[in-house]
Length: 362
Image (cartoon, rainbow, N blue to C red; front, side, top):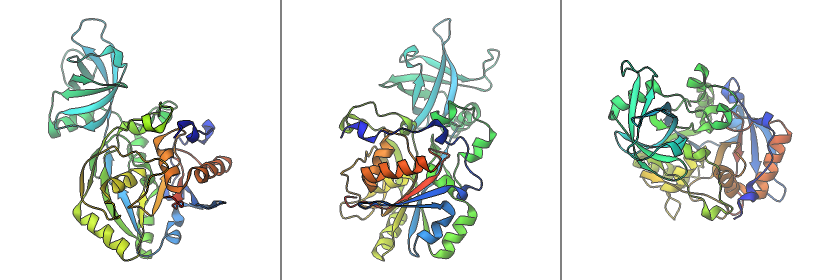
């Protein structure tokens, strides 16, 4: 499909720079596809009234790490150019794939020193060798530390990787340490938050439980590739970056029982949806999954595992807007986004949400 079909105009003042408080006070646009889509303006706190007993919300429990590193290339003489790296996929105990800039200043076997600027001692510094250089600014970094020691070093020298559309307008601060983390975060490894989960509070979870709505956890370590623009003219030419995911056999069995008993699987966020669809069999049942996925969902995709999707509002021409258009229909989502923009909904990671029902082809 042509990528320009997924374009739309978004005023800059619709981009949220902070979340609302409390989190479940965020606005919620309920979208039910049809010849004339049913658009219902609610808030996230209304979810217990919108879901049924027996439904299950599936959350991504990944935890965002301090994945943005700043340093210098060293060892090739002066000048030593400044380098910024955003980690996006762990390969093993000491190696990560990362997006770097300026990539043109790096070659394989170069050393980058992240952290402190001082040269008297190495405290507060972290070295990495450029092991391989790929396309689009992607490199493989082999760090000087391994395992938990490396994790601690990254947390010390790194920064919370706010999305570029926020970071370009204000600096990261202490509030973001909690604001950009869901209440379910426990498995470290993401470099972007599963933002639909940001809207949930303990009070809302208690009300959902009292309503008879269940909860399940899966893990997809969201990579920085989620923010990359689609530069191709047609969707078939776009390459998705892989992300590591995990669905336990116990969770898969439970979700299969829910559906067999008439309950609905409600994916909280496109990350949960992409993982469940990666783990789904052709008959719609979900199997255990522990692998990388680069699933790219565009209109025409047949959804197998998810009945309802709760998600934020996404960037124009993005793979995520393509995904929601596949789920509820392109024209439905274009009308929903037009309504959201005209009605003052807040967009992107810290913005409002929509509850999407499937279109006829989903």
